[in-house]
Image (cartoon, rainbow, N blue to C red; front, side, top):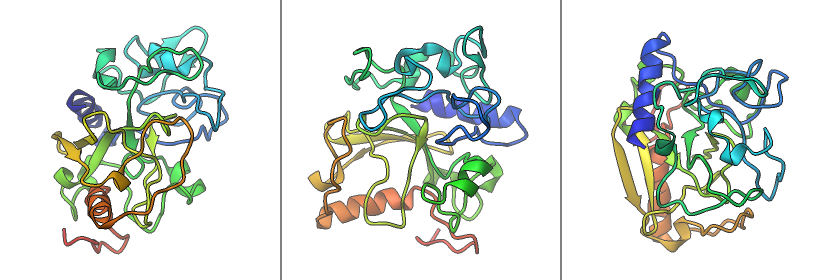
Length: 253
């Protein structure tokens, strides 16, 4: 996780402070996220899920090219755009060793376990066209220098995502609601791995069984939080970077 975060920071340093792109839909007409003519995206492609059993491209869950570690051009798929793969060329760093889930189509391990906070690096198209996924009332972090009102050490960038919801590299956050959008994975004894915009990483141990979900490959009904679960979710909310457009922080940053 820390290696992926370092790649994110190196990319920003080489691209006029801009953070790697992050979106959940191919808005520019191409069929594959992160492949031209679509917007720059930190990682390309989208895995198959039970809700959407067609991956893009076919075999995305096991296609290492989509990580960018083999270069940016493929004769069949085309040209990657915005990939961080040139900065983290070991494909293994994108996959948590404790993630034992298998791609639904080919029944082999996914190439990637992590996704990126939907408020970090969010493309303009994602923010403007999908208010159901990105609430524009809150600050979106487009550049490393945007971490002003809130410290970069307080905003997570990457999280290992539960195989129940992982598809593209965009982790849907809904911090102003009472439950998850996408689910963090609990690969570490009911704990989840997060990296932060300053480069550090944390393992968060969830205090309540209402805070996490087993791997079911089908989106479950959201469990109501008990008191400990509410405290867990508050920890998460505080680290999504929840700052209003008026600059007012919700958590005293």
